[in-house]
Image (cartoon, rainbow, N blue to C red):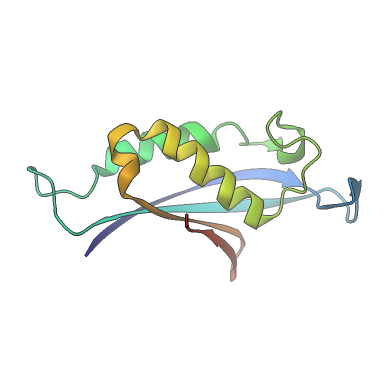
Length: 123
């Protein structure tokens, strides 16, 4: 099995919710997102997925949050924007953007802070 990963960072604020109500103060993080694609067989160019393709797709999704409040994004209003929720969100959005390469998407890992991460794997 071959795996490739690409990661990027963005700065954003968030606050967790409990029963729809804030349960902590608004605070910021330098978020790090890593996307991994995998396949048993390389394509005709010897690739799992072109890194530039992963970079463009991930950049498009992370740019929605950079220097903003994650909880105010229309797709996340009323949801508690935990690292787990964000990992799932990025996975779903990347599936939409990667076209045929989406079949190779294996996981998305979101680091909220150094040493603190959440991973979403479909299935």
